[in-house]
Image (cartoon, rainbow, N blue to C red; front, side):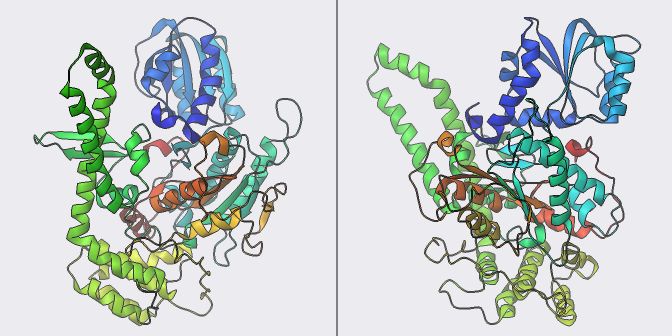
Length: 591
């Protein structure tokens, strides 16, 4: 489990092992593990089949599928507390039991009605029934999601009928995250005169956390820990998820069709191959946040180095060197495979970049930052935008540029907007632009909606690449929290944590420190940030950058789901559609 040695995935797997598999380990018998779609995704994110086998699990089955009875074996059920799951469970024991006994573990609080149904029909088969408080997905070491892309429509569509229910579910999921991390954080939210979602979610989480921690196992109330949870809406920074990002992970997910972290490509012999881009691939972990220019430079160097080390061994063959090579072969093969994948992926990114994206990036950066490479203020944004509109870029690319133009002005006039829509030829698809108003982002300028732009941190000393001058706004917030500079007028406290952020150990996240060991950092405070409406890969990257720069704090970032620019635009456009299928806790995993 190379990639899961630290961070959220390690914590989640450790807790699942301690609770779900500990009971089963007391007996020497092997067991069957039965999962629903959500718990399948949860386990896949933090362990491999070999890890499960080490816990005496020999078969993994789908709760919803027809299964052969194995009456001599005991079964572990790890599932969400929903009607659908409980019905499927009862069907396994009524009228005739499929298994010898059941060990039941729910991801979250199980309503009394469902629990009583289980008891009524299956009481004599249930050996254990526990709630483990874990209904989020540990996406990466410092990133989690609630695995609910449908939350975007539920929260922001004017036709939505389940906004309140969706916010309630997200609050429950955030409580399980805090419980898994053993934190009872102080809660703050970004105040917004147009939108109430951050405030509502902060109140819900606060209420549910208080209830959860009223009594811990030792019968004492758990006091607030030094952690902080910040809740913010997507409108807080509409620029970051729309820009072309040139760091490796963000760029690959924007320009290449990567589904469920799976990259499909053709190998040199023309055969179709696929690779999983996750934390088991250590080269991916090493490269994902680097700029594409560095990645393109580093991979060929690595290939040369590993080839040279192999040649060196080939030079003089002795039994000893042969034995050494045999030992190293699996890891050598793994390294070569990883390098081949990333050589291919980086080439794919670069070919998209040189064909199209490079020219777009300069205009985008000037519009986003408000000044050009030399620091000269952009006086006429339309002059920056026009070349993009006149070039035969795709509709999505042009829409992204138009949005950056509108965001840079904090809204435009109706007349100007109509001209832009005609220019991009999206008269019948104007929702791509107009629907941003549902998020509270000013599109048509009106005095009542006009809001001042937040002052940004001075970063001219940090910049390295002309086409990557923009820094996500969330990074400013992270650094302000670390330095205890977050304004309480903009970020009111829903509940306060002890004075942990009073400057003790708080240093600028821009000052470099000696890299600290991952566990050394655990002694500091945790800072969790939740974005309503999705997070971009560039925002995920900033959590690692701030954590790596500051010893005293670990930043964890999460949302309902992860965004790519094109997916976000499609979601924005769909907001004007009528009620979609509603996403309940059990459909989250299929979303």
